[in-house]
Length: 229
Length: 116
Ligand SMILES: Nc1nc2c(ncn2[C@@H]2O[C@H](COP(=O)(O)OP(=O)(O)OP(=O)(O)O)[C@@H](O)[C@H]2O)c(=O)[nH]1
Ligand SMILES: [Mg+2]
Ligand SMILES: [Zn+2]
Image (cartoon, rainbow over all chains, first blue to last red; front, side):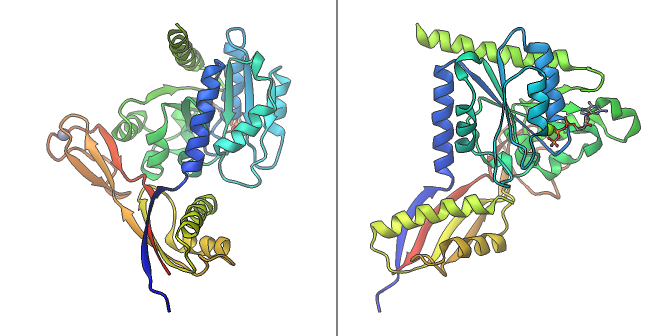
């Protein structure tokens, strides 16, 4: 009988996805496209926010959308009805998007005519946090009816995002949601995250969100110009 | 919830090393996993058994060393281990501030394997 050996491996799991994501980020940067990854629980308002963003920014940026509904085309149809190209990504029942799936989705869009691509990730606060999509910025929506305790339950998601949208603030008066407690809980895990309060119903805060996004897009464009010189 | 792609990634890496070392059978794989990941040991093993069937890795035991989730105070760099019970209202034990950087808890690492 042969002996049992200890073989060193020392490798990171999911490196394949990280490498694909880095490649995609580089490719999009070279082409001057800003990729935003939007995450939330089901129904927090991802599609509504994308529609509001389109209203505000479509004259400034040429926008495209990748929709990751597990098994329907409802959201993609809403985006197309707003006059914006949208592609449905089949996740095959998967609970998240990975960089490879995003790449395939992007292939179906005409990138030469786009400045901004928004990914509506699968509705889920767990898995998408672990898979880099290749996006430049990660945004998440927490809606008021979900409660202010979510950072305690899904710390990783709150930790990896660059901006948090607290949506459905029109429900604030109807619930015990404390905005102050939420800010504290989020900043404990991620002191530099931007927090923007919105209502996709009344339109409150949408101008602030659009300004944040436009600013981030401009920053990346300027970086690109500096690199070109 | 996303055990399957993670297990697939582990299997691919292990098979690559098994081929490099002419391995006939893998008995155990030693992993480091951050506590912030929502993976569960039992499900990891089940998915892994399913994926590795028919390979030299079939039947290998996954030994998981869980890496604690640790925050570092933004002001004085004091470290605090967190869990889902003490996270609410947590403050720095040294300076009482409540803004931190995450320093560990996201690990996903394969250390080594026991094989013949
Ligand atoms: N009152 C109120 N309702 C909202 C707001 N934002 C979204 N909704 C409603 O919430 C429901 C879900 O919104 P969607 O935009 O479809 O949410 P989603 O995150 O895209 O949902 P999934 O794609 O199914 O995960 C819809 O009925 C929206 O009209 C808001 O700010 N206030
Ligand atoms: Mg939607
Ligand atoms: Zn301190």
